[in-house]
Image 1 (tube, protein in one colour):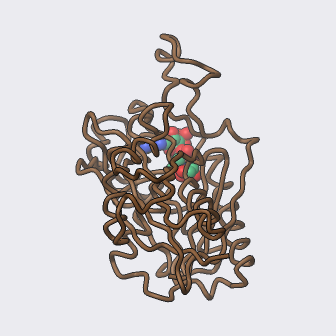
Image 2 (tube, protein in one colour):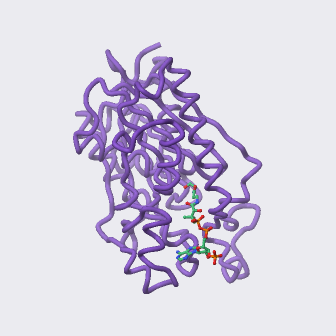
Image 3 (cartoon, protein in one colour):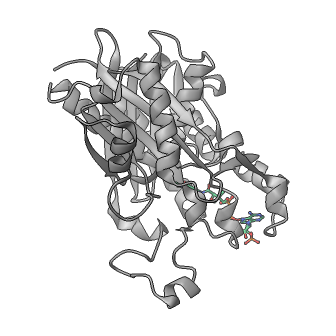
Length: 325
Ligand code: UT7
């Protein structure tokens, strides 16, 4: 099997910023509540008319440039998203066309906040087994389009954005281990109830606000902490490593308190945890990948470093990955 690594990265965050002070004018909330309960100060939101593929495309272009590859070099495009432009076709197909990646197969992955980790795990297998040479994996979301701006329990949490990576064969380092999991018995605690084949859109589903994301945050909190801790332990064990080997953990950014509880359980000091939640909120599949892009951009990931991606979300699904940079 070939060694597979990340050879290019890029992110795109829409320009518009919604601060906690802005939210205070929309729902009964406060900067103090949002900051202390979540760690979020502001989030990026799309402009009217901007969709997930628009964000994904800009991130993809940057990642390709960073990898020094042309669109024609791509064999595979995966887009992790729960907010596609439309139910079908896939955002990945739209990206394939926009980039002009005429040799690439393309499909979407629906694994919510763990979608990017699922994506790199799938793409890695194609390259490791010599089926494909170069894959583009994108995490992109327009969560503002499924956010109920009347529900203070959820509307303060989410943001829009996209990140992309190019995976190719590497001589040294690369992806050492990946671990994916699912517990489908808890579909009910985080979902979008209508608009699919179970509850197709009707005037009633619209009136009942069923086209917005619903979340039992409190219940999810504990499960998130335990599951992300276990996923990290499992993937490191698979890699034959311990937490002292990890230079930087780049977790899904749902809540700073969840992240810090996981780090504490794992014995990883604060300085080795990367956060962008304060500036971006929770961007589901785009969170882990944009955090990775920013950590690299800021020089917090050096050649030879061991990084740990750890994500958890609706499904419930989770995924973790150990990479030697
Ligand atoms: O992305 C992957 C999956 N997502 C997660 O893993 C998210 C996990 N959950 C969380 O991050 C947290 O549970 C939340 C941030 C969603 C909520 O924080 P919490 O500390 O669990 O708060 P809570 O839901 O227990 O609510 C506490 C209180 C309630 O008031 P009462 O019933 O105690 O009077 C809420 O009504 O805070 C109230 N509240 C708010 N107050 C001001 C809820 N949202 C707000 C708000 N502003 N925006």
